[in-house]
Image 1 (cartoon, rainbow, N blue to C red):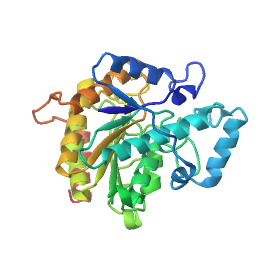
Image 2 (cartoon, rainbow, N blue to C red):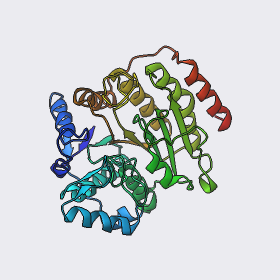
Image 3 (cartoon, helix red, strand yellow):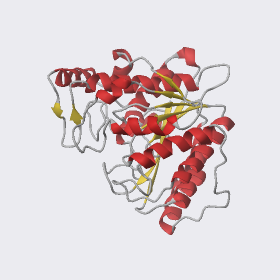
Image 4 (cartoon, one colour):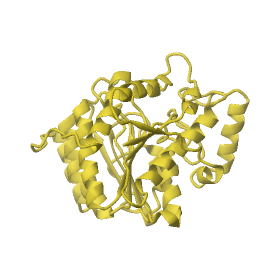
Amino acid sequence: MRFGYSDDCLAHDTGHRHPESPDRLRAIREGLSRRHGVEYVEATPADRATITAVHDADYVDEFESYAAAGGGNWDPDTVVAEATFTAARRSAGLAEWAAREATTAGGRETPFALGRPPGHHAVADDAMGFCFFNNAAVAARAVVDDPATNVDRAAIFDWDVHHGNGTQDLFYETDDVFYGSVHEQGIYPGSGAASETGAGAGAGTTLNVPLPAGADDDDYRHAVERAVLPALRGYDPDLVLVSAGFDAHRHDPISRMRLSTEGYAVLTDRLRSLAASCDAGLGFVLEGGYDLDTLSEGVGVVHETVAGRPAGADEEADPGEATRETVTDLRERLDL
């Protein structure tokens, strides 16, 4: 596994005690340093045309000017420093690198873009939820629109504890990028109901599995194995990008979910097998995760699983009744 990284992403200074801090990347790097064979790539920042294929040009200009003037609070949670615009371009560029790396001919790599700020809440014309440019969306649009990649359809699967409202909105009415999410029900940003399945040309290319607070490894496995994987197989993408947040971990300070580090290994294993069966590239893009130890462990276990580490939990998942009902409804709704 190769990792995309740049020190530019450390310069996005969110201030004292903000959960989305540069220490997140430092902790990941420190954890990976204890594992052999880690290679880092400093990808180029995303260019303006690549960003404005997803985001409104006026918004990009406003964000750039706001940062150049010294920044401030874009909203109560989303902080801009002078260096934030540069960091956001770099983070989007790292995601684009991951998407292109995953689809390179002659033996696909499995890349992981370690960028910040994260991206999945950013909508076409606004920043929110710590996010400015929607990194996974920028990456997916770049490779789908580039005929040289031979990627006609991409899928983004989001396992962050929060629903990626921005990613969903950007592709809700298009059929060349599938968006799927497993997330905690009822928390920020309040979107991601199971009834949200796409519209127009994108009807059926959005999948949301909202899980109740306290959902654990069995709930996630059941949701992924019985809903997400069948939907992805039916879509048959050329590229699968994972919006990889680690804030559903049982020790994360802003989550009520109960996913374990081994649970992330199992999810990675299932997605690796799915990508292989579809002959699709597989790449990871960092989103949330705010306990430094479990964030580092989560990225590390993805790395180890991609490298061949056996994942546990071969027995059938035993989810809670609410999870079982949600998944059954989705399978009927989407004919999975």
